[in-house]
Image (cartoon, rainbow, N blue to C red):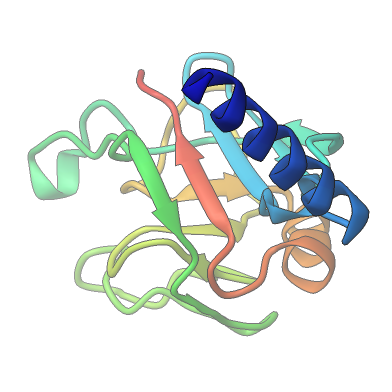
Amino acid sequence: MEWSNTRFKFILGFSLLLSIGFSSSAIANTFIYNPKTLTWKAINDSGKVVRTGKGSGGSHYCKDIRRGCKTPAGVYSILSKGGAGCRSTRYPVGRGGAPMPYCMFFSKYYAIHGSYELPNYNASHGCVRVKPSEASWLSKNFIKIGTKVIIQPY
């Protein structure tokens, strides 16, 4: 008898959620970068892939700083954003100021940003490079502060 009462309450509660418009919109927009395939995808709050593109993440080794520069795998959120004039304050070493148009920082030192140098390998100091036109679209139409970013393992 107790199980039936619990089941009834569950069905009633679920029906109530449906009647007030509960939907999958609770799922947030998500940007995913895959360093193995050098690709990214933008998935909207309905779970639909709305855009994909080529990317370039952190290099296995950066000569100028004598260590690996892989983009750390994990789940992040966008913390801050910059416009078309965004520039690095750290790289290149000794000459800082590399252009990073439409930078979207997912940690203190790592961002998704536009770059005209998009080789067919992971080449950055840890950021995820995308075409400038794609960075513009992502920044203006898809990525907001708090958007989820997933960096897959190498």
